[in-house]
Length: 289
Image (cartoon, rainbow, N blue to C red; front, side, top):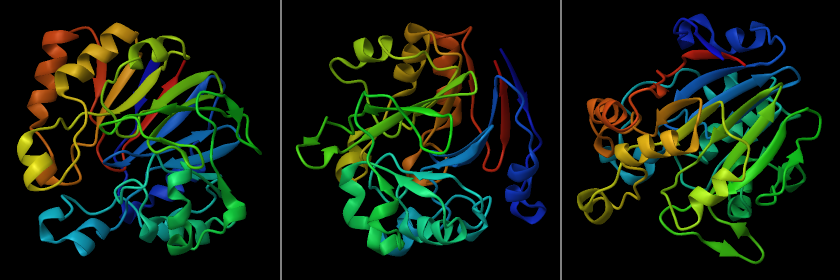
């Protein structure tokens, strides 16, 4: 399996144009990092955009502590020709109505995939209920109109939360498409049964995982729910045999991040032969299986 990194493409040169014109050969997928846990995945018959947060919505609603660390790599209204908009859960940096609304308008045929807990947020994003799809947990489905096979994976941020009507509150997604398997973990920590569950699912060729850690200050003083520690991220990749790990959720908000050197150090110590990457906003990684 080879990974070809494309040149950084900023908004001025047209990230959406690059997505549109990038060809998809057999046994490949094109992935673009959008910052935080934002990811665009292009396959042979569609474009999926997961957890895009392309505005300063968190700062606008919760104060200057949550200022973005960099401009968005593209504008929400630039997301044209999207097949599915997806969110892992309802937190604003994953389900951003000020991103999803213009994106849904720019891609009127796109459907929205998210946990049932996001249903009440659809009106604010201007997305009608008939465009909304709640995937069943651990039951693979083929996304209509594509050949992408989707498995929703329960996540714990920090706890597994399940409601009879709404389903699991936090989700990750395993996407099997064109011979390549991608795991978008959403926000999660390792919980009881997680390792066993993941061993029973398709092994990712690429896994985007949240690795900004957690600590008392962020949990109690600023009210930020954390994620995997760097050591845990390295352990997961090593124990589960993942192909390449993308270490995410550690760039958009400088006040809710840890030094990138901590991530590199953990990988060097606990998984020295593991392929890993920290994607820059707008960067393309082309995956060939």
